[in-house]
Amino acid sequence: MGQMHTYKVLALVIYRDERKLVTTNIVRAKDKKEAKRQIERKYKKLPEASEVIINEEVDIIQLV
Image (cartoon, rainbow, N blue to C red; front, top):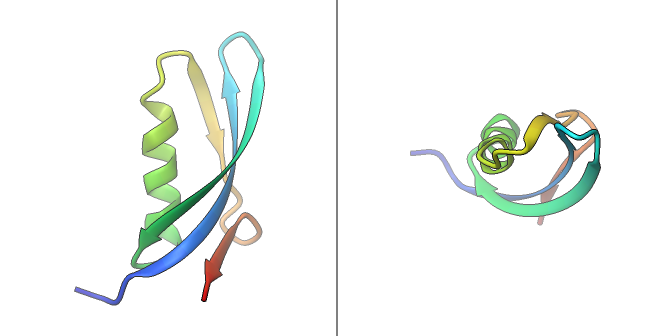
């Protein structure tokens, strides 16, 4: 297994009734792609969430 890193992930959650939520999350993951998947899974579980938008290049920052 690869080394785990800590990432700060900014996500935009869009709900079915067009409400929007911007959230910052701290996660442990192997890489940026895995960090993005973790947050997408977390918010897509919400029944009222319609879309989760995360720009992998800008919205995911590796913490030291």
